[in-house]
Length: 595
Image 1 (cartoon, rainbow, N blue to C red):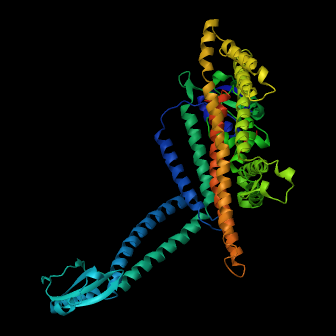
Image 2 (cartoon, helix red, strand yellow; image 1 turned 135 degrees about the vertical axis):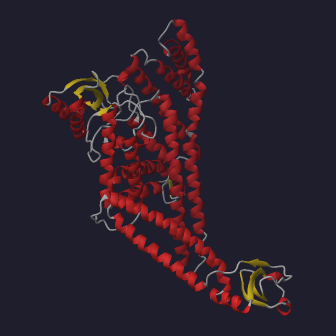
Image 3 (tube, one colour; image 1 turned 120 degrees about the horizontal axis):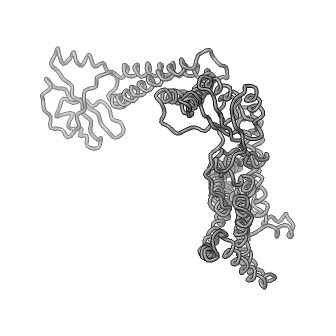
């Protein structure tokens, strides 16, 4: 649900405003309304520094070091890290360059270039270096020219021509390459020195990583300073700038400490229940199950203050939709068991809500797997060990498709009920009648498929049409209502499109089941092909890796497509308009909000 908000207006003397703000920040429940203006130079500098700190923190977090904090301060870590990063980049460029030279020099072997230079300067003898594809090299060249074959590697032949002076010409169809400037041993020494230096820097980075706590604390300080300065500079000043006029919102169930502070300090303020036109921030409060699905709802725009929170309403459907897409008892068990294992590991304690969400999705997968009778790519309806009357309970492919459409039909009808409640809450009970017209029409069309209800189906549809014509748009004169109602009736095609969208749940489930069957089939081919039980080892490897890959692939689609159905079909049919903003209290970065 959406937590009720209390709207505050404050009048504070400008000289006392900074102290007042610090106290409000310490209490940490007020979402302060700010004017949108350009950032000052000081704010830009703070923001840039905070971004640098965050970047360094993320980089150091990837390093696996013991959890023992050192005595380094945040700025020292930041500046030293940036120096190391620059040096590492320079070393990487040098190593790439030397690596390229090593590849070029390796075929020529190890020699001292200074001796070749001495030979040229003292005796006037020069060496020229050539390379040619081995298939084009001619042995006769060794008799015709002062040529020495050095090496043959990777289909290339490397040779040297000896001449008096560097201007001698040779009629050879070969590529002349530049004279090597370093010996192979010297080049390797240079590479070893650079590699050793990189190891030293790596060790230093590991030491810096132990100061991540200092980075976190300083980043929080920067965030607090940034938000504090932003509010201080953007709050309106009245009476010639001597009085600060500030507005804000706080959850109605969390204002006791704030009110006590204001009363104790004789502050001038007005507090009243927030209204929709005030555009108060949105804070959600749900039970332990629905709360797990709030991160999914937050991927979309927040609701308006006067709307219903749809999180607890779509949560059960999302769990079932995910299960329909995965459609396998075994895969659901993997999710649940993996969740228990991860929750037992201390380092994953901060991810507990997400792990619990995965476990609930796993339960949905198990439930839908029992309906279809699928477990690790096998069909339970084909297990002869099960009684015939049990095997008949599992739905076949056609029935699973119908089931997916039916559950979609239920969500659409449920969405229309939510739309009626939303309209009644916002515009009065008469406005809430219109959506029931569509419930009658869709229900009547569904009743046509059943012989027992076919007789009253058309009457139900007619009642629905009448409701839409007269109550679909209750505001205005009778002719305006009828005209808008006729236009709205055209939306029947959209409902059929929405309904067909739910077939994707069935299609994804079938795709995953087929992939699981393929994995099992491939694994079974290994049985009997190797002695000493090695065939069962291969069988196990294929089963584990194959089903792991199928779980990973199916999980992606099983999350994305139910989310699409939620935000498009369900939100649309629920009359969701959105446009709110999430509650963001002005508080210390390390202060948690319980309510």
